[in-house]
Amino acid sequence: MSISETDTRPVPFGAAPTNGNGGRPEQAAPRDREDRAEIPPRSMRLLRERRDELRRGIVAGRREAVDRQHALGKKTARERLDLLLDEDSFTEFDIYRRQHGTMAAGGASPHTDGVVAGSGTIDGRRVFVYAQDFTIAGGSLGAAHAAKIHKVMDLALATGAPIIGLNDSGGARIQEGVMALDGYGGIFRRQVQASGVVPQISVVLGPCAGGAAYSNALADFTFMVRGPAQMYLTGPDVVAAVSGERVSHTELGGADVHGGRSGVASFVHDDEESCFADLRYLISLLPGNNLEPAPPAHPPTDSDDRPALADIVPVEPNRPYDMRAVIGEVVDEGDFIEIHEAWAPNVLCALGRIGGEVVGLVANQPMVLAGVLDTVASQKAARFVRFCDAFSIPLVTLVDVPGFLPGTKQEYEGAIRHGAKLLYAYCEASVPRIQVILRKAYGGAYIVMDSRSIGCDLSLAWPTNEIAVMGAEGAVNIVHRRELAAADDPGDLRSKLIEAYSEELMHPYFAAERGLVDDVIDPARTRVALIRGLGVLRDKRTPASNRKHGNVPL
Image 1: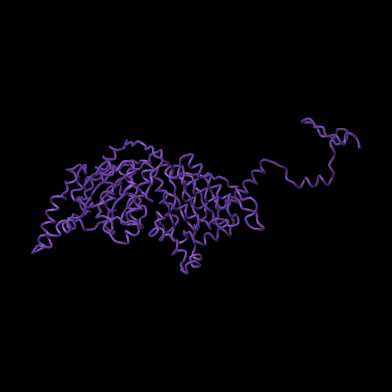
Image 2: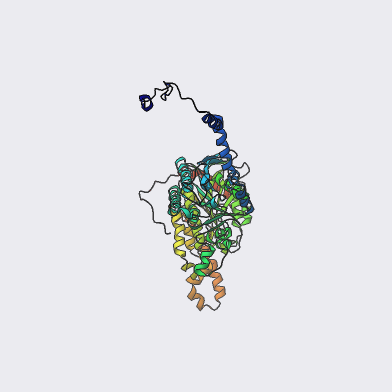
């Protein structure tokens, strides 16, 4: 063997390689030339074509899987993003991401790993979003799937933009075992870190079972669509095996169950189109993060007087009326969005604008249980108050409350503990707070509904206000029970005592004379008073506490 045949010295850059042939390149055999001719020459055009073809295939998805999704009455993940986001605003992350190895025996893991993740805009404002893709492995969550969601959440928190999750998933990917569970844990931890920093919105558009359901409970707002949306920790089969109870998916965890009974769903819709339309409207009322104000709007140019308010509310304290009509007269152009409409309907929570400024409204609803506070109403209002406070949204509280709902059922269910949640939420809130007392404000419920004693900034009242420990009739029955028992005509005496009690302790100016109400206003001027009050409080600042955090009575 010659030296040239074993020479391993490096060849200078640009020099022709030698192969023991006197420095001349070795001639290729005819067969080698034929093989090379079959391979297309490498070029940028070819690479771009291959990249475009791969991307088109990923975006289109498998035809049969897409058809099955449509047959279930559901849109695909990408169709949902088209409905939600501004046209051509979506920037996708990790479209080529796939799970290592195979998802199932005999097949390669598909790209995207069952979730479309990225960022887009809604009315020009930045949001981050992920949409689970049920056409790929039933949208099940594995390590790569979770990593994409983690990235979206991290970027949302870093840039200060809302997070929106579109849920349509069979749950944890069983084949990946503990790695799937670890992925869910990472999502929950990030949700807690983002709580009160950026708004979080969850949309349930299909199954959402097991641990995945907690993501919806941790979100600030949860939307559900009737029919395909189902959410529960354990499905009907497990329930039947453990308890013998037979229940359908819809009966166990349908949209109306969570919208009206459990309170997990903030909004319930009949179809995806109306769901996304309402979601877009909600985003228009929310700030991007806790360091920026909610987006203002130009206030209406018409008069701020609302004469209809004087006719909506009856003078008689026991006659019902719809508090939504009052809210409609107070907010700009009668436009507001109600949260948890079907859950705890005896208290209303809504977002709207007054004078162009976004406000949160909490109001008793006399049409339901006379507007009393109970366990679920206290929970509903407390969470809403804390949300508004976290994102610097002023609070307007409309009061017409006869007290807390009495009874053993309420006491056993924790009326004291749940009522304390609302009390805590108001006491802790540092945003501008305005109370308006329309009629009744009795007992502990008066205190809890953002009274002056727990820190409201302005307390206004209508001439129909009655602020007292309890109603005149109940007070007379307790205070004068001996006189009534001994009277020859207890009915006549009771009427006289009630009239005297009302005139002495419950007249419209009693609280105002003692500094507990700032002004008794004309009902028709309520909107004017609120606009001026919000203007006075716009620059309110409250020093931060040195404590780590309080101990909310959860």
